[in-house]
Each structure stands twice: as structure tokens, then as C-alpha cells.
Length: 279
Image 1 (cartoon, rainbow, N blue to C red):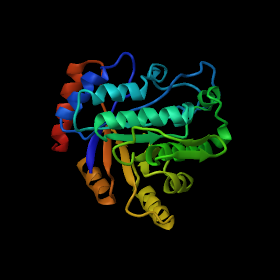
Image 2 (cartoon, rainbow, N blue to C red):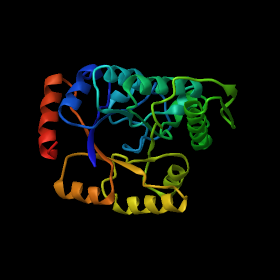
Image 3 (cartoon, helix red, strand yellow):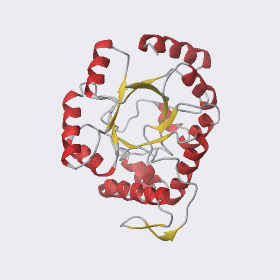
């Protein structure tokens, strides 16, 4: 089990090219960032945390583009994984997005992890032409199409939402880009993960995950998947007993947020957190 940092990026926070080296120097294994291209001012979709259309943080309105952010981080680091928690692929063109991710993976030496979500903000998805009732199918097709472009010498895909004929596309990722799904830990989501992804990212409201992990492993095995799914847990503060329990469950990575109003404060926090985690 390793430890990473998630930054809720914004145009007011510490720049990724400043924060990412601090994360790496402190001994953390990964750097995760979110995605929201825009937030419609009038919304009907309820935020999972507030239960209504209000937002808990104005950084939703100010989020940096994840791929530009991770490219900036890649240029000034050598080791940490560069990941999203979570990206929204269905809001992009899949061919263009596949090229962007493959290029980032190539330039970073194979350090990209793609964390994706189905999208809670249905109004945001609607502005991208995503039908709310088909967003899971759309995401599955996007991932299948991008994997074809990443792995096949001559790639093609035909689906309901994505279609292209035999095509060349390089660079290819250095290795298979892991795909993790950030979603509630329930049977429906785990069946989707077992079919179409490599692991699970918990939601911020889940910390008692033992039953969910057992369920995920059962569904994973029943689907005929080899090995074990990657499990990334969002944590508030390190509690040794809880970390030991997660380690025993096979959790892959535990993520912590970071105060990013100044580089000095971020560096101090990272140093203290690394000490508590014995990095």
C-alpha cells in the first residue's frame, strides 16, 4: 500500500509545477487531480455532498484542466504517478483524448493512471451532448475505443457513441494505462468496474469499506478477472489502526488532500503527513 496526494486544483491554488515536486520530495507515490470543464449556473442535478444544487466549494467553478496540469507536473518530476480523481472522458472527443493521454504517458515515462467518473452533474454532461441515461454505456465505449487506439497497430471501433474506421495513432502508452472508477461502492458500480476497468476509487463519504472491498473482490472473481482490482481510498487524516486494516484488505493507495493556498503551507503539511506515514 502506498500513499498519494489529491489536489482540488484551481486558478487560486499552488501551481502544479510547484506542488508536484514537493509531493515527490516528501516521498509520496502519486499526484491526483480532478476535472470540471464548466459548471452551468442553473442546475437541477444534486451534488452528492450537499444533496441539492448548491456546491460545497467554489473550486468546482475554477478547476484547472487535468491534462495540462499533469503535463506541467510531469515536466518537473521523475517518479510519482500522474492521475485523475476523477476525469470525465465523455465530455471530450475520444480520439483526441486518447492522443492527449498517450502523449502524456509517453512524455512522463509511463506514469499515467486514468481515474474516471460517470458524472454526477447531469447538467454539465448535457452541455456536452451526453444523455444522462446512457452515460455509463458512453463511458464504456470511450474507454474501449481509446484502448484500441493505445494498443492496436491499426485501430478501429464501432459503437453507439463512438465510431471510426481503421486508423493509425501513435505514440502508444509505455504500458497499459490503468483505469480506475470513482463511484459509490455498490454492486452495480462494481459489476461495471469488473467489466470495463482496473479498479475502484472510493468517494469522500466512504471510510468503512471492508464490506465493499469484499463485494468487489467477489464480483471481480465471478467476472473471470485475474489478479486483484486496484483500490484507491480517499482519507481525511491517517489513523494507524484504520490504515493497517486497509492494508490487510489489499488497498493499493490511500490519498490525502493538501492545503494549497501557499507553497510554504503545502510543504509543511506534506512533511508532517509524511512523518506520520513513515515515508
